[in-house]
Image (cartoon, rainbow, N blue to C red; front, side):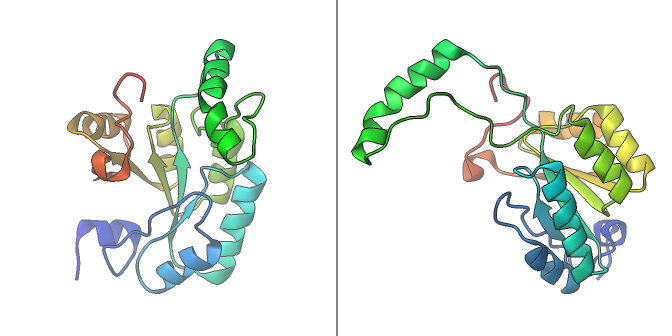
Length: 191
């Protein structure tokens, strides 16, 4: 079997393992890559040190290409009043399970947008493929990755997103049904 995606990614089968942040492991990504598809690491919940450790561990298990995935959501804007309203609304649900809501909300998934230390790690360690979910990094970031020889992939949930991905210069994009996943498109207000 031959097609442009197989050649681009240097894989045998047109399958990309879902890069699930928090549950994808180096062993899983390496097994998928060793089987001829594209294994993936979901790094959306990882620090730079954790990301580096996962990439190094995966490279110890495979010499085949694999993907590292990052979240590119809009950075959150803190709003103390809104957070207090959430805590008040959720208090009865926490109480039902014998708990209390946190005093403040925290961001558990740092965005790759403007995350210079993560970009420097990727440029230094050069994984074969870097993919983006929930948005895109800056166009210059995509170009820096590509100049390093890294294939970039992005996920679109609408035609508008696919066109933006193409304009930003990503190597390839995939289409995902937003109803199935439960997330909105990143071009919509408030997404």
